[in-house]
Length: 301
Image (tube, rainbow, N blue to C red; front, side):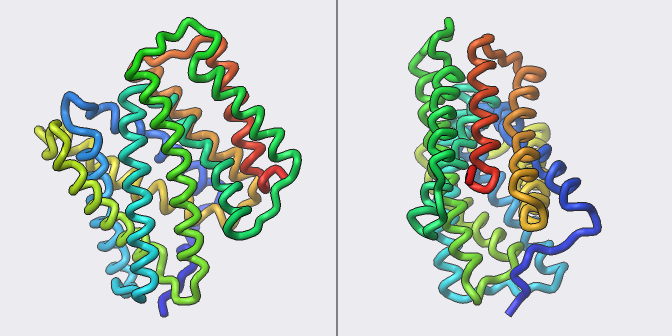
């Protein structure tokens, strides 16, 4: 049986986690750089997943890991691939409709959904304090999406917000499925597990893209370069850094560092796409991010 623990690195866990959060913060920006005018959101997800799978398979072969997994692990990987397909399907549309920063912050409500699912599946304790923090997050999200501000609640914008929230729910489900797979004694090397999961995700996205009218193939070298960046920087390096570092850091510290992802995504959206938030939305974003941090710090217990 292959070693199932995350591969160790010579870099400090904190440096790796910061690097991973920065890598993931560009995910929404890469998607919006392509947008619906260049490629369809489902097709973008397919290329991210398939290129990431290819890189992970090559990495696993170079590390002399066995590519075959036990049948039960294949089942968990298939389920994880389907859930992550839903994650990318929802999130990429949320990015295009509601903005890179907004979509990323909304997706990070997974902290509260994951905690609730962990209570139901793993019987992990939830404190009264946690519910208070979750309530403050709901208030923050309300302000963030524009309640009380002069934000135009167009049909497209509302759809983007709903899809961003849906992303948080399916992302939490993905985390739970991967945790269940990782708890098995016959769990394979994480690079192999992620490679197969990415491949299954790509398969579902490829099927779904057949109903999408937008372009499936990258039309030029620029689009191809952005897709390669998604597969390498986000799907491979970002997730590898986070998976490697999280088990070696305190939850409170890692939760704070991971807030770099939605925070930087908001900054990149402002710099590259002139996305902006009203003062009241900024207050809501601050409340939401603070609640996400507190909720991720040992489940606020």
